[in-house]
Length: 278
Figure 1 (cartoon, rainbow, N blue to C red):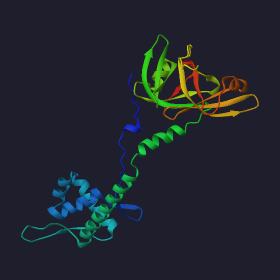
Figure 2 (cartoon, helix red, strand yellow):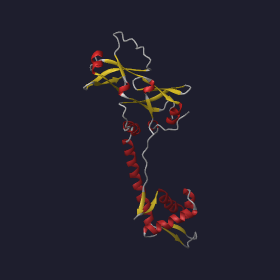
Figure 3 (cartoon, rainbow, N blue to C red):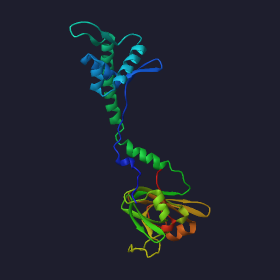
Figure 4 (spheres, rainbow, N blue to C red):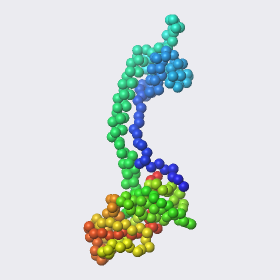
């Protein structure tokens, strides 16, 4: 199943805007009406001007009537007689309006270019703001990308690649996989309660631990905060992520957990809750 979600970090973010003139609470004209005025000035005909800018004949006449009314003075007038039999011309006020609009539009375009440069990287920042805004009781919130999905009879095994070349595995139902739109390459976050994390200390040889728990994350003890009975121990992983476990004070002493030491955080795949940004 493919996900229809759009990851904003992969979408180009652009700043847009438009300029228009207003008369009181009503809009006198924007780019399309100014373009109509300019085309009338060039062609001498509302019909030809409408065709030139892709506007209907009726729409052009309605726009002209509206602009004349809102401006408080004629912008477009019909001339009569003459060798060509007359036509449609712009008043000096309309010519000045076109020049003014184009000057304002140039400044507006420069503003957008400067503002656009200021938001470089904003898409990534916005994605991060969304992630850090998640409220949950789980102490550990790890963000990564789905690297593999293995389908089983009832449940799916989902692997999440984390920064620092770490991978954690979660077991979720088929329904959850589909509801969350999980697919390889999709962004997701993992929630693990600190009480579900068990800490181990490797032997001097650093041999891999032989445990049934799928997730084993090796890190450096960043802090040990003791309470009356339990202690909160945080490990700093390669890549910058931090995972925290709650263990007894006796376990801290038995394992010799101190800041700067090495330990392994272990938790079962069934203890991992996956989520995605809506």
